[in-house]
Amino acid sequence: MRPGFIFMLTRNDLTVPDAPAHLETALAAGVRQIGFKDVGLPVEALRAIAARIRAAGGTCWLEVVSLDADREAASVRAGIEIGVDRLLGGCRADVAAQLLAGTGIGYYPFAGRISGHPSVLEGDAAEIAASARALAARPEVAGLDLLAYRGRVPAEALAAEVCAAAGKPVIAAGSIDRPERVQAMARAGCAGFTVGTAALDGAFRGAPPDLPGQLRGILEAAACFG
Image (tube, rainbow, N blue to C red):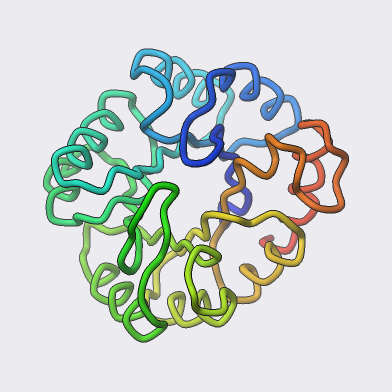
């Protein structure tokens, strides 16, 4: 079964200070795929969040947004220390794969060239698809993280090309703030998608503005993932 909706306890690529309270709201709404970034809260707080997710029968995702080599390696080590189930993002597969070997953590690096903070996807469709193909060919890569709505290429067409090139699960991340974008990613063949800022800000279109209402609306939109 595809992961579908992954709720990120983040705003603008930072884990929010009140993430533990939002986690309880998400669990009460039936969300079981939950993640956070490696920045915004100390490792001890993130470890407690990860333990709570696992205790509720959920899957814990960490998305790495550090762009320089040393910080990215530190973020991967933090994910291992926290005990997450899946690692999203990161731009240095050689470094991450070596650190993750034997941990059992599923590794989903970014496809394409990433810049800035919040992260932006650079390049054209052919370049991004080539990156996806090369990364997915690595046995230690479980899938890919795609910033489909953070680049210059039309998102659905880009996601479809990346999914076809990868042949492994692709998670669409960033700026998914309406049912139409969820449906577009499902049509493109993505295995799942993340929503963080939009839900926390009450900005996911067509859903009540409170967080429980936002999560219910996103879960309804995610039904297309099966």
